[in-house]
Amino acid sequence: MPDLIVYGAAAAILFAIGLVVYTLTTRKSAAQAALRDAQRRADEILANAQREVESAVKEARLEGREQLHGDRASLEEEARERRQQLLASEGRLHEREESLEKRVGKLDERQRKLKRYEKRLLGMERDVNLLREEAAEHRDQAVTQLERAASYNRDDARAQLVRAMAREARDEGARVAEEIVNRAKNTASRDAQRVIALAIQRCASGHVAENTVSVVELPSDDMKGRVIGREGRNIRSFEMMAGVNLIVDDTPEAVLISSFDPYRREIAKLALERLVADGRIHPARIEEVVERVRAEIDEQTVVDGTAAAAEAGVHDLHPELNRLLGMLKYRTSYGQNVLRHSVEVSTITGIMAAELGGEEAIARRGGLLHDIGKAIDQEVEGTHLQIGIDLLQKYGESEEVIQAMEAHHFDVEPATVEAVLVQAADALSAARPGARRDMLETYVKRLEKLETIADSFRGVAKAYAIQAGRELRIIVEPSKVSDDESLWLSRDIANRIEREVQFPGEIKVTVIRETRAVEIAH
Image 1 (spheres, rainbow, N blue to C red):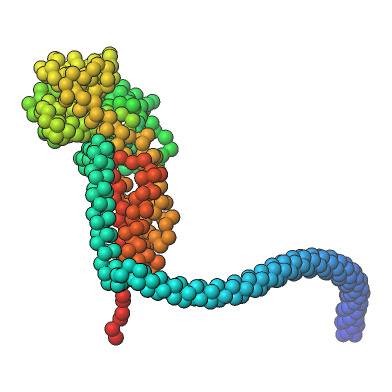
Image 2: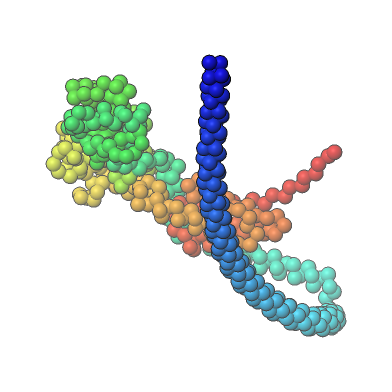
């Protein structure tokens, strides 16, 4: 029995050993198979990597060749451009060398000519000196012979010559004085016209050229939508109440008011500015503000008309005439403000009437009211002349004033001196330099012509036309123009201006010569 157990145990041990050996053998075979598979994969990966490396090397070589080819082409192009630039520079250098050679040749030729002229001048100078010496000898001989023949010595002859020249100078002076008197008589009329023109220039006031568009500034572009309103109701209401066109475009923070009537345009501008400042913009508010501004402007026209009448020296006008005068502030004629024009005509007419001994009060009144019809000629049918006559008759003006106003456009013959003066003052006020827009270009050209004439003279450093062209102030270079030459320069410039320039009145030519010496003390 024990032996059986021993045999069983030995058999079990042998079986276990056999099982272990079998397992080890099986695993070794699997490991060898896995190793062979791994070796095969490694060989494949190595072969693929080698092929990729070879392909990358080929691509790199191709790219390097292409880049090398491109760089070589760009370098060749740059070299060609530089060669062309060098060739162009070389050509310019050759041209400059040729030009310099030509200039050097001309300078050499001029130098040779100068040397020849110098030799000629030296010879001529010697000849002149010889002739002077001969002339002096002949003069001394002639004086000696004359003294011997006339039994006069040199002092007696000189005294007699002085007496003869004095008598001749007195006769010449009398003749010159007579010529001056006759010239003064002949030019008295022209001088009187010049004096009148100067008086007109002194009393001339400034005129503002009006346009047909006013600009209203807005605090922001958002305000444009509020001005337009829902479906445009605000802008339609404003245009209907003010009688203008309101333009809302791409102009930043601004709208335009367009109208040929400056009176309505001014009302619209003030009303819109108040609406924008207040912020409440709707049809009812627009109507309220426009009516309020219109009432204020109507009151202001009375104030403006009264002030203009006082400035012109005209008193006791009917209040309605004062209001109509104020409305002329918003009327223009060829860019000239009609109210300022009326005041100017009144002033000029009054001055001339006083000088001629006429009725100054009637002259001033007729001059101030001569264009009164233009205040309402856009509202009433008829010419401004007929409208003005009806207004003056309606508000009780005298026949003399009405006649002066009626004749200012030569529609009727002037019956009084005051009517003639109103005609002249109206024409002079409209035609003076700078009064109307169509004269501005001519006025500027005359100022430029004055400065151009002055600059054309030798020694003039700077020239300025000042005082609206009534004075030409010239600064000369002291090294080129002496004090005596300054007198002749002013006279020459004045004479040339008289020949070449048309101008009213007179132009004062002032030549300034100044020498400055500056030293600094250390």
